[in-house]
Image (tube, rainbow, N blue to C red; front, side, top):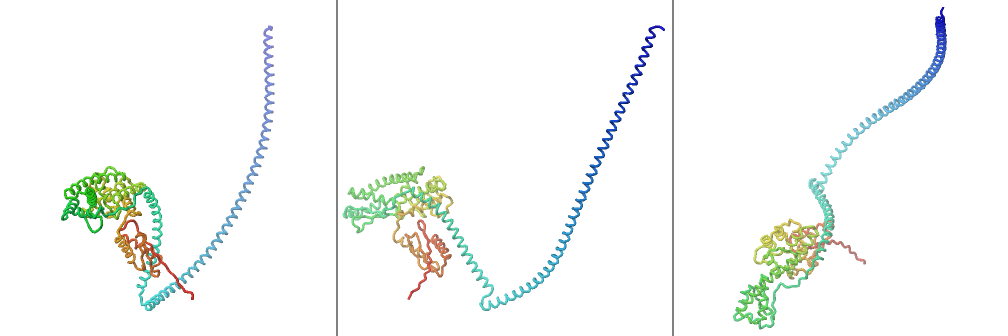
Length: 510
């Protein structure tokens, strides 16, 4: 056998032996791994059995606890239900007892209602018998007695209403008086004018009595010429060194006075000179009147007036009312109206304008028919642009209803200007007549004993009989007297009514 074949066979044998050895080694290793895996599996199985046993034991314990808790809760609920059932049974028993009591009470009430109805019928019958007996005794029917009772109740209600009205009036009056007092005080403090001291009678002083003869002239021709030229009546009487001029027109009277003074100073008194002098004085008077009107408008701070209105204002310089100069009064009313309108947030220009023109009708009231307020309203309506001013002038004495705040302001300012101390002067006869009328109005009421007009007619004091007039009736009487005075008398300012009720108890110690 060749050498190379032997080597091949030896190599092949070695290779086979090596494969067999490797197979046996790999088999042994696999067997060992199998045994090891089997051991681990057994250990895992044993551990899993132990854990499952523990879980089962824990689950059994938990189920036992849940079961015991459920049984306990069931027992508690069963006990609670038994208690509620006992309560319901007890309440049902109580309701049954109450129902029985209610039925018993209902029966008692029904019985009492029957008894009460019987008593009512008996009382009604007794009342009817008593009413019949009372009607027989008092000789008054029930309807008459009812009317008497209603009259008494009505009287009590009237007294109560009078008390309430009095309280409300006092409250409102206090508030209004406080407000108006402040406004009027401010207005009066800011507007001061002179006290009236002028006379309404025009008297011309003569240097000697012989001038009277010269004024009369031969067969009275001088006095006739003067009266014809001026339209004024000259009264020459026994009064020493004086001549009286009489005329309704104050401007004519002033022209005659000035002309007469100039004639006396000149000394030449004859008809031609009289006519010449009167004509010059008349021309000068027109200028004076125009200047007086312009000066009054300037004092009142009123601009833009028509020249005719200014001329009529100037004529008021020679017009007097109760001794008060009308032009001065008009300026004062204009200033007061402006101040009051400013305080009350009204139209100051309208109030000032209407206050200045409110008495302009007095400049021509002796020439036209109607009141000076109506005449003044027509004049202002003709020459003034504002219809409101004309309406205020026509209504400042309330002959026409006042419809604006400025109208009330002008009316109040007019009253304040005429009622202030020293503003006016009236004759003794008119003064006494006004006081007498004031006292007679108060005497016309039932229960009045005496009346006294005091404070120059600004207050009336009424003494009443205490047996006929009580305190509530005294308040009502004061209001009724004030209302009657407002309706019956014409007076400047306001009149205070004071009702005095006095009760005296007199005893003598012996």
